[in-house]
Length: 301
Ligand code: FDA
Figure 1: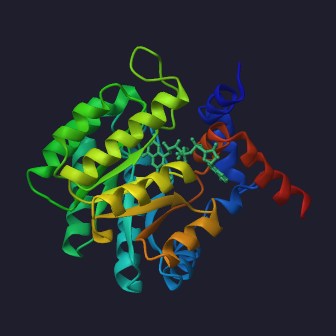
Figure 2 (figure 1 turned 90 degrees about the vertical axis):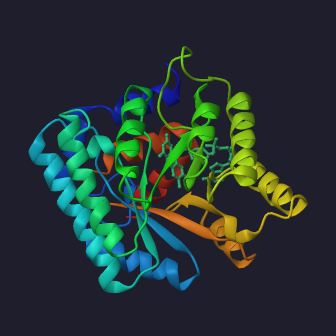
């Protein structure tokens, strides 16, 4: 088993997830998770805003199997929307449909999502639907289609490792889209396995959406892709208002600031809450060097 599969396996471990919730931010997660409650998260958002960086806020949680947990997740996200409004911070919402009951009952999930999107809409706040694994992909797009009949303040993510990504980017070109490589373990029946192919597909999706689509969020820590986007947008005169770069909270902070100071729109993905374990393990799976973050936190104590 390679390291990526090892950490993805850990990310899905229910016992570890439950223990992590109980014992708070551990293992160095505090450097990549902006606290366990709304107050701590808003403080981090204000600090990023002060540097000219906007934020997308993820109230952590995923793959819930009980209605009670989904309702709790919904209430927490409603609280975040209220906090964005009250504190006048430059931020929007990121959420995961499995956090709101996608695996329990589709209609129930739809109603939870509707409540969130409606409240966000009242305050002029955008809601991004994060995309999860392939098993949830098609029904997540169906949920988005249903909500799009009534609301325009929603967008989603296209993952370049999927063979179907090009079809989706064409179908959703009129949406504000976040373009990423993809973070879950997928089979070769549905997804590219080779890094070069995934990177190349991401570049082609980015170019397509920058040219033909609505607002593009380029979400990567990969400086080669970022440099490509800088050159491409300069060459084709694509205005900076049409796109932004996104990175995760706590990663490549120097580069986040540099891009902001160069005049690019920049948005940091700010996860917070007690349900940090699966998110954190996926970050280790993506880049085992992230273990250095863990080591620093543990040994600095
Ligand atoms: P990748 O990990 O492929 O690294 C490429 C190269 O970049 C490395 O070899 C190194 O040179 C450099 N690099 C990367 N990280 C570095 C670091 N910390 N320090 C120094 N150099 C570094 N996925 C998903 O499936 N659904 C989703 O909804 C989202 N949402 C999302 C939002 C945001 C804001 C981001 C940034 C990412 C996601 N992702 C996601 C995760 C995404 O799919 C992907 O798994 C990770 O971003 C890792 O891929 P990268 O493109 O960042 O670089």
